[in-house]
Structure formats: structure tokens, C-alpha cells
Image 1 (cartoon, rainbow, N blue to C red):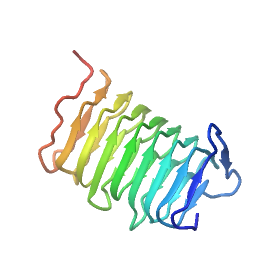
Image 2: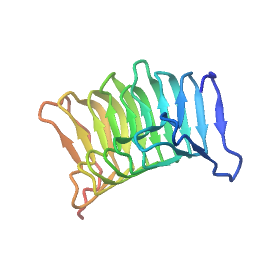
Image 3: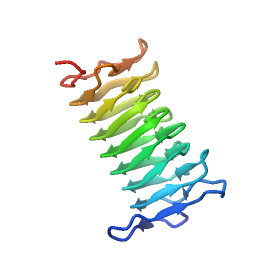
Image 4: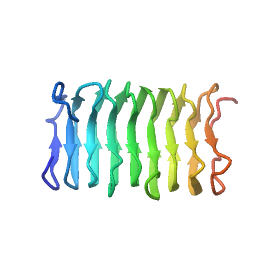
Length: 212
């Protein structure tokens, strides 16, 4: 996508597939800001990414599905800012459902399952404001949400099942202004794993930790 402000939107009630199998590339490469992708199933070779955000601002992904790729959405290059993913589903991702290492990340009403990581690398390359709410993470081999830097915002109303752990905060994490609330963690899962060298006092009240 090389047009600023472009919206790719499927027709009402249609579920078209954009297939880049055999092209040795992401299904959709985004190279310009303020792009919206709405209502597609995305396919590519197994080692590729469904949507690759090449360092642009304000990418919106709505009602998108991808299965069996490396990543659903990759937003990890320098200068990336403003990622919104809503009403989408990413299954069997070998790296992560969403890679989001810069600022201004919103993920809502999205399912990530049977994958290595759910939302990975949050704030690892820049301080980040996040809204991660009303999502489902199921059968995630490693962290469902990984935080590696200074982050503020809310992680709320998410459901975690068979994850390891639900939310990982590394030694570089600063969670002084982060709230984790009203999430449901599985009885056999570690809900929040905080490295001893992480900074700040985390507000993680009013969550369900898998036991009455």
C-alpha cells in the first residue's frame, strides 16, 4: 500500500481473501500513513507476515483473519506510531499475533490463539500508551502480552486461557502508570509475571485469578 490515507474495505457481508502465497512477501505491505484495512482473510507463505507496517503512522486493522503465518500484524520498525487492531483473529502464528514495539497501541475484541506469543514487544523500542481490552488469548506458548519498556494505559477485560504467562513485564519494564484490571486468568496459568528489576508499582486489582 503506497497511498496515504487509503482504506481497503471488503463489501458488506463479503469475506474475500487476499492471497500472497508464493510471492515471498507479506500479504499486505503498508508504506504510507493513515491506512485502514477492513474485512479480509489474509494468506501468505508460512514464514511471512499478514500485514507489515513499514514504519508508518496510524495503521488501522479491522475484522481481519490470518492463520498459520509468522505474524498477523508487524509494527516494529523505527518511527511506527499509532496501531489499532479490532475485531480480528490470528491463529497459529509462529512469532506473534501482533508485534507492537512503539507508541500508541490499541487492541480490542481480537482473538489470538495457538501461537507462540500474543501481543509481543510492547514498548521495547519506545515509551508506549496502550489500550488492550476485551480480547481472548488461548493456548499461547509464551507471553500473551509482553511489555519491555515504559508503558501507560489500561489492560482490561481480557480473557487468558492456557498462557505462559498472561502478561510478562521484563526487567526493562516501567509500569508506574499502567493499570491491569477486570481480566480473567485461567486457574492453571500465571496471570502476571514481573521481573524483579522492573520499575514502578503495578495496579493489578480487581482481576479474576482462576479461583473463587
